Length: 390
Ligand code: SAM
Ligand code: SF4
Ligand code: SF4
Image (cartoon, rainbow, N blue to C red):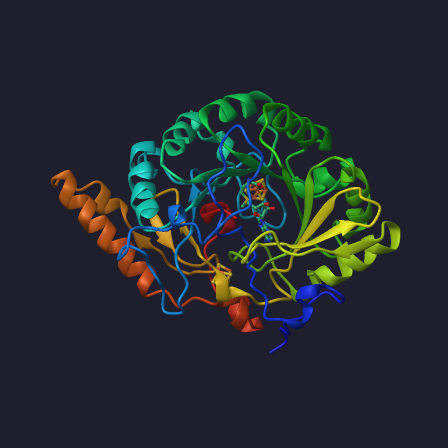
């Protein structure tokens, strides 16, 4: 097996078991819309489900984060996610009738919240392409005690940021893979200029959707030449730039281990230009390993999805656009909830059956893909990132 879990040198977490996972943060407390991010307090009783309702999987992990994919479509064709050769004009995207309605999504979300979910991330495909997405945000924002976030490629934010904020969205994460315009257009393969994403980030800041995280997927030999420029650009901005290792999600991005640039190399390269020092996680189970510039210019994060294995604190579950539950980003199959959601039975009985299904799926969960990744598992037919969301 070629995968050797390792840590960037010098980080305080280098010699201790890492309580970290790569696709999203965990254990966040509700963030009031008007205020900056509060320190999460998993010990706070307000953050716990009623006794008897908390769900634990076979590895003792409870369910805290729900990721909801609202579309499998996208206006980009990022080479590492939706390569145009596969996702071309004739690609069979889901028909409208197969998509969960907002009411169906909220019904499932509500049951998860009763079971302990405290953070909901809206994703896709490109979630801002879903018609009236702000209406869904408004409906989810009414759920008690939940932080609502959204991941986007950013180009529709100038049009939608304020509406999303008014609807109750707390924060956004914006993906941007290069600052060099030619390189960025090559990465998104849809001819979108860098400027459009930067305008989106600015619109999100103006609307109060911060602190904004900016995600850069690093593909060795493709966009790693822009690491230092990205770091320099976002210093002093207040945004948190995060470098994500290229992952073997899906079955169409032609992933190869030698195209993964380990996070420790990213840190070493930035450190040479702008000296860095490690900082402690904000909370247990935080997704990114945090570093800050020694001169006070801000902080960055690295998400070592491949070179470090840290499934032990993974508290995420994913709801696909068509209503399937996935307990791991690298899953090959999901558990359908849509048939139940659309059954003609009495509402209370459907809710009880949905809740039982959710409990069963989570309690049987044993996933730890990143810990056991091999060349063989990387070649398996896994669900696509654009279908399940990041
Ligand atoms: N379209 C939105 C966007 O790009 O932000 C949301 C969906 S996208 C699937 C969510 C995140 O997954 C993005 O930050 C994207 O860069 C990341 N992603 C997609 N494919 C990836 C891969 N193969 N490895 C690592 N990250 C990936
Ligand atoms: Fe679209 Fe996001 Fe995938 Fe890029 S990473 S193709 S923007 S879903
Ligand atoms: Fe990622 Fe799956 Fe491990 Fe969670 S269990 S950290 S989704 S590989």
